[in-house]
Structure formats: structure tokens, C-alpha cells
Amino acid sequence: MENPSIVTNNLLQQAAHFLSELIQIPTVAGTATESQAASYLLSIANKIGLNSRVVEPQPGKGSFIAHIPGKSEECLLLLSHLDVAPVDHPHNWKYPPFSGTIADETIWGRGAIDCKGLVVVWLVILNLLNNLKIPLQRSVLMIAAADEESGGNLGTKWLIENIPECQKIQCVLNEGGGYPLVFRHRNFITCQTGEKGQILLQANDSPTKTPLPSSAKIEDLYPPSTRRMFEEILPKLVSKRLLPSGITKLYLKYLQKDAPYHLDLDQLLYHTVNFERDNQSTNLRICTMPGTNSEELATAIIYDNSLDKLEWTEISKVDATESPLNNQLYNYIQISLSKFFSNHKIIPHITPGYSDSRFFRQLGIPTYGFFPLLPDAPLTSQHGDNESLPFVTLRKAIEILFDIVTRFCL
Image 1 (spheres, helix red, strand yellow):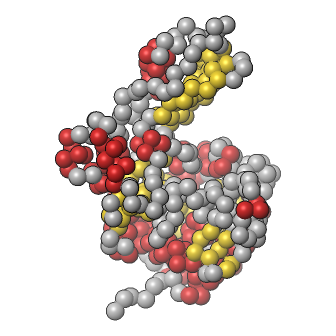
Image 2 (cartoon, rainbow, N blue to C red):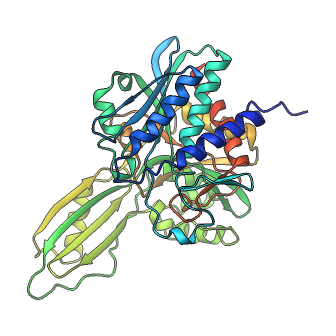
Image 3 (spheres, one colour):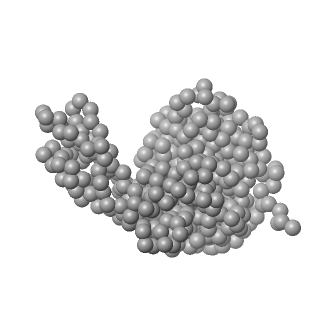
């Protein structure tokens, strides 16, 4: 006989209601409306007795913070964000994107997955910890930050520099992973362990308009997360003996042949290089895997493609980041997932996009992206049309993440 879920039907309905109302606050990136959402969370937190507050470095850019103390001041941060991506084609949506419609046991609207769904999951977990009076060894800190979709400078970055609780963070759980994948009928779910870096160089074109290569050949570099991913997915012969060769990529494509959706292997597993030209200049954009010196790589690409006669200027640079795999929190993610989905395994991955996780990894704080979206949520679902979160997925996310949090903090 199965143990009853800690997430009762009443609690699930309450969580769905919170998410619906949060979606109805249109905190679109660039509109400085996050304070409205943060104040809404504060009103809920006050009713359920959580120690919480809203901080606002600039008008409209409010972040919500809640804290449950443990015996130690060292804490696990449960991170999320309040702003959402713009809606490009609202007429393509089944329900209005900011209606927060609840239909077919699903909550519909922009932010349901990225990232207001996770905001509500963390709020429910803090409520459970508070109500159950669980004696925690480590403290638990929740942040629902402003400004993530616009770079994070007025959200997480500012909070790290200005609020004292951030000095006690030991590990972080955030968005960025939790997507199911199928490789030759074997089930996996991603855990984001790092993010690619990016360097953008610009050159004024010479009068002769130097021809640009269609692509650039660069040596593949596999950081620990990618190597572990290969080891989990590929047969030992391929992962250990043929990893540096192109056979690896071909074999992964073959394993995805019957999958419901496919990974973009170049984006997730390799450096990518793009040359772009407009009327005045040429841009060289390189997305790098962790462990790479981006300046040296850019120089090599420029010389290998005979573009060294152009004068190149660095426009921007973001370093790649990666968290260790031999971490207690990462181990608990696998243990907790196996408890609820015994036929799924964790695979670490480096994502091409950026999240607030990078601010903590840059400080050496282990940070993992894991919002379990089972049984079916493609990697590209968070910014798409008809963003939605089914009740069954919301329930499982609360159960799994509550299990992870209590394992780590008890």
C-alpha cells in the first residue's frame, strides 16, 4: 500500500489558486511590475505565518524573501524569479496568456513553468516545513527574485550584494532542469549543473569585405557534467573509447531516433561559433563550454579562419559556470527522483541559456537547476505558446522537491 501523499487535494487546489493569481499579475520583463507579485506573496506569507519581507532596490523591482531557521545559520536557498518572458503571439494561446485559467486540471498562462510555478512550489514547501514543525539542521531561505529575464542585476545579483542572508547560503536549488528525455526507450530527467559562457567580438569590415566562413572547426571540450551525461546515456565502449570522435554525436542522434522530441546536441554539448555581418561590422559570437579560456579560443578561431587582418574589439563576455557532481545536494536529487520515479535517472547538463544560477556559481556556491516536469515537458516549453502546468505535475514537483529539501536540511 502506498504512503499517502504529503500534498493533499486541498493543498494542491490551494497551490493551483496561488499560481493562477500570480500569473494574473503580468510581470513581463522590462515593465518593473515584480513588486506587485512580491507583495502578493507577502500577503500569503503573512496569513500562513512565514517570516518574510519584500525588498525593492528600485521602484517596481521588488523581490520576495522568506526564511525558516534551522540549528545552523548555513542555509539552502530555494531560488526562483517573478518576471516572465514577453508573449509574442497571444492569439495562438488556448486561453489568454495572463488569465491564469484553471481548466482540464491544468493552470494555463505565461510563467506557469518559467518560473511562477516554481515560486509556488517553494512557497508550499516552506508552508509545509512551518506547519509540520520539522526540526531542521540547516536553515531554508526562499527568494523569488525580480529582473531575471532582464539579466538579474536588480534582482539576484543585487540581493547577493546587499542582504545578509545571502552570506550564509551553502547550496542553491533553482530552475533550469527537470525536463524528461528519452534515449532508446530509457528515461532520463535533466539536472542543470552549469551554463555555457559567451564572448562577443566585433570588427569593422575592411573595404574588401573579407569572406566569412560558414562555420569554424574547434576542438570539442567535455566538462565533467557532459562526460557524466555521456556515461549515463551511451554504452561504455562509446563513452570511454570514442568520446573525442564524431561517432559520439552520431550515436546520440541514433538513440534519439524514436524519442518524442530531440535535443539540440550542438547547443547543449559543444562550443558553438557564429559569424554575423551587417553594413558596418562583423560579429563573432562564441558560446563556450565550462573550462574554456574564451579569449584564447576566440583568438585561435580568428587566426584559423584568416580573419586576423580585421581589428577585433570585445563587446561582452560571460564566463561559463559549472557546479560539482560530488555534492550532497546533487546526490539527494537522484535519490529523491528514484523514490518517486524508479525508472528515471538524472543526467547533468550544461544549458546554453542564462539564469540567476550563474551569480552563485561564480562565487563557488554549488547550484543545481531542478524543477521536475514529469511526465512530459519538452526542453523548449517554458517560453512557448500555451505555457501550462498540469495538477499532476505540480503535485509531483512539490513531493519530490520537498523530499530533497528535507533530506538536505535535516
